Length: 75
Image 1 (spheres, rainbow, N blue to C red):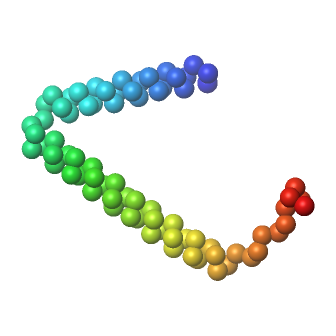
Image 2 (image 1 turned 30 degrees about the vertical axis):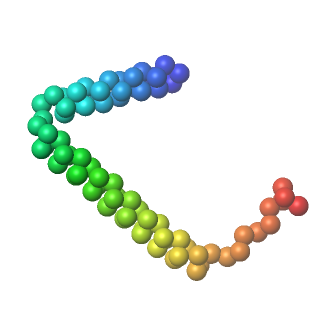
Image 3 (image 1 turned 90 degrees about the vertical axis):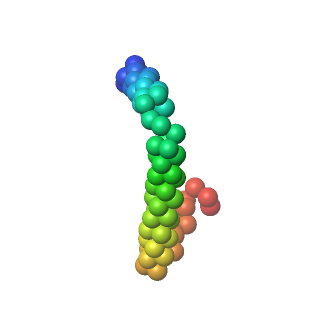
């Protein structure tokens, strides 16, 4: 594991760099702007869904949860 993790990080970085180079070298400016707009929309929708699901989960769990028992380490 000591050598696998850095190798995977390097491989991922090289793949990301190659994909970025291909994207910038083969696409027109209009296509690049469409990609940027799409990526921003994905982040907004993704975060909006996660925030709504998380809030609903906490509200629902909060009604059913009982008070926490005192921790032995703090007393």
